[in-house]
Image 1: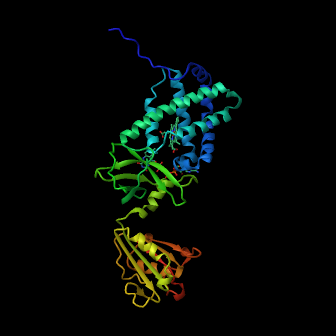
Image 2: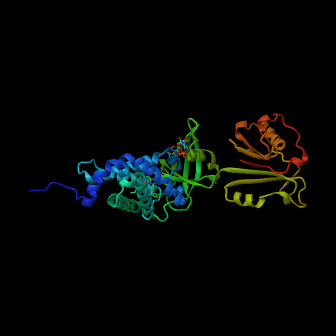
Image 3: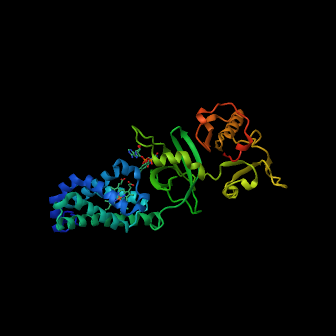
Length: 383
Ligand SMILES: Cc1cc2nc3c(=O)[nH]c(=O)nc-3n(C[C@H](O)[C@H](O)[C@H](O)COP(=O)(O)OP(=O)(O)OC[C@H]3O[C@@H](n4cnc5c(N)ncnc54)[C@H](O)[C@@H]3O)c2cc1C
Ligand code: HEM
């Protein structure tokens, strides 16, 4: 049976093919400079995108290289029918984009800033024809990505307008000193999505400085069918570079989102009226499964049967196994608390502190001292 040789319909217009053929090498040579200029200008004009892009990559320049390389490779395969297949690259980018909730309208922002950066870096070499040809390349690439991303959002049953779901950390397993596994459960009451072997998820961490940062983590288990597990290695900064932002955060702060963890808050004050944030702490504690609030007042209200009278005394308070203690208050007071806990067998490494005043803990003498009455005003222990 006669057949025709398979061929691909050229996507790029003939005039643009010529221009791309003539300029691909110069764009490739300047691609890194172009994207290095593109990101700061786009992120300055759209600071909301700082919550979508990985700022660690921005600091190290890694994303600049990835975007530049993919645009040039895409242009080359448009003008060269013998170029290696590009589909797998396109799919990889689309997967990354949907994991981050990228939307079609954002392609207009990226395109505008990318083409402006091309003009700035290449200067006079950029004639209107050159701009038009690279604009066409960009939008062909964008159109294919948008289509593939729409398909993937559909398959995953995800509405790109609401791509992120809240999860809570229900368990934390310290695998090694530097690796922790976090078991995550949907906090919206909806079922867990289907998870394929080797699949990764983007975790958006709300960091203490108010920024939000995404990072990808491979799902290390979804056996239960209701929970996802990710396993995170703590990234340490080398040669003066800062420690990894999100991995450090996940190692150090997840405790906040473990509702099943046993929590004891102990507070000492002059009177109940002086007890700052008492109601807020009780409200937050009410959301936890196992929460105990203890209070010591120098002058309890008449008829107050739940608080204790006098200074804080932790010698009788039940302590869970593997207790982690956070203390804050004046230094002599914390020495007292620490001494009591050490005497009860809590390891020093499990006791953290925040001094209300200059941080002299390191220089402080170890033995417990009587607590001056006037200094016992506030302290919390969260277990
Ligand atoms: C598909 C995929 C799957 C992944 N799966 C896993 C996984 O299962 N488990 C896992 O642990 N990780 C995984 N990762 C890596 C993970 O996404 C993060 O990249 C990793 O946790 C580091 O993030 P971070 O925020 O801690 O580090 P970042 O803050 O992003 O820092 C990254 C690096 O940049 C350096 N750096 C940051 N700022 C600067 C600066 N100003 N100057 C110089 N250097 C700087 C840091 O020192 C560090 O070495 C995966 C990544 C991908 C893409
Ligand atoms: C034609 C247009 C685009 C191209 C060619 C492109 C290309 C790429 C490439 C090659 C990667 C790296 C993929 C990997 O890690 O394997 C990437 C990642 C990413 N892209 Fe795009 N992209 C485009 C549009 C967009 C748009 C519109 C947005 C939304 C603002 C976006 C946001 C991101 C983000 C956030 C990442 C993750 C990397 C990081 O955070 O540093 N991209 N893109």
